[in-house]
Structure formats: C-alpha cells, structure tokens
Amino acid sequence: MDLSKNKYLLLFLALLAVSSSAWVVRFLPELSSTTIAFWRMFLASIMAFILSYKTFFSFVPDKRILFAGMFLGFHFALFFRSVQLTSIAEAALLGTIAPVFTESFSIVFQKKKFSSKVFFGLLLALLGAYILISKSNFSQTSSMGNILAVLCSVAMAVVLIVGKNIRKSVGLFEYSRWLFLYASVCLFVVSFFDGSNIFEFETGDFGWFVFLAAIPTMVGHNIFYFLVKYLSTTTIAAVPLGEPLISSFGAYFLFGEPVGIVVFLGGATTLLGVFIIIKNDPS
Image (cartoon, rainbow, N blue to C red; front, side, top):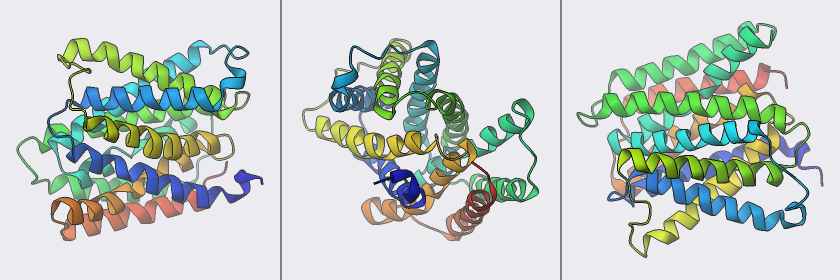
C-alpha cells in the first residue's frame, strides 16, 4: 500500500499522536524538561534502530542530520519547559507556529512563488496566536513560557527545512534513528548547563518516557518526516497548529484547566489558517 496516497489521513493521525505529549508533562511535574526530552529522544532512537537494523552498517549519517538533530533537541527542551511555565493551550499553539518560519525561508531563500492565499492563512494562524498570548493569565511565568514556545517553533522549522532535503535520498528510519540519537546527545550536553540530572527520576516515570518515545515521536514525528518528502515543509509544519484544540480539551478533562472563550477564538482562527495553508500550498 502506498502510504503517501493517504497523506491527509496520516497527517491527522500524526496530529493526534503529537498532541498527547503536552499532557504527559503534567504527569511529570518534578522532572526537568531536559530529562523528559532526553529520554524521549534516546528511547525513540533505540526503537528506530531496532526497526532499521538491516541497514545499520550500510548507512553513514552526514553532518546535515547532526545539525537537524541538534535543533530537534533544542525544540523538545524548549517545548517541555514552556509547558511547565505556561498553560498547555498556549504552549501547544505558540510551540507550533513553525510554518510561519518555513514559509518565510522558502520565499526569501528558495525563491518560492509568493501565494496570497498561503500568506493569508499564515496571518490568520498568527492572529490566533496573538489572541491567545495577549490574554495570558496562567501564571506570572506565562510570558517566559510563551517566548520559549516561539523559539521551539523556530527550532522545528530548521529541522523540517533540513529534513526535506535529506529525505529526498534517505530512508525514513535511517534518517530518524540518527536524528533522534543526535537530539538526545544534544540534550545530554544541555543537561550539564541547566543543572539537570537525567538519571534522577522515579521508576514509574520510565513508563511515561516509553510512551513519549513510542506515540508522539515514533508515530507522530515519523509521519511528519515520512510526508515531508511528498508535501511542503509549510504544510507539514502547519498541521501541529491543531494541537491546542486537542491538547486544551484533554487538559480540561485530565487536569481541570479552563478552556475559555479566548482559547476557542484563538484556536478556531488558527485552525482556519491551517486549513487555508494546506489547501493552497504546493508540495
């Protein structure tokens, strides 16, 4: 079966998978964001190596994958930290505005033809983000959490831009196994600077690490890396903008976080922008 023909269904499944990561962070309040991100990446790398063991000795990664892996590590560290400082809804939305940066890069550096419809979609997505961030009242740390979430979007944009070029000639798991491994190495180094002890966690926490590696990463992110070969980076980056709607409702039922009119208005505006982008952005 040609999975690429079912790309929009796969994008929806990926959205469901990646949306679960923000909830898990709430179950691990005592752990540093670096610790959570490291084990997510390291375990996902092991899973990818197992699935692609036949090419273990035949594929040698290049510097581009190392570069992308470093930024993926930064992406997760920044995202998990932002969830700890602000609401899940705000972190999920501002942490997924990568299409703004991928589209800007494509137009400025790759001479992509300007599309007024895609541009309008991006403006709507940004407007939704602005509506949400302007009414932040989660805590006194929300502003810093929102800034970190935006930086996490920049990091993911870099990963997708670099990954699209690599995936033209490299298999999915050959790519992702090294991408995740390099991300975990990056996070290991980061742990020395932020004072995190990545080996300090409760036994029960390890099950959540496995979940993060298997569902949001191996399912969610690998679908994105699979489809980036067939779709534009802006389209791939736009799909996770639907996370706030799923994440915030999940947060309401799991943690009692309020879902007010601002979340509805900002989320609906952003989702409309995403729909316009997907419909009008060429591969």
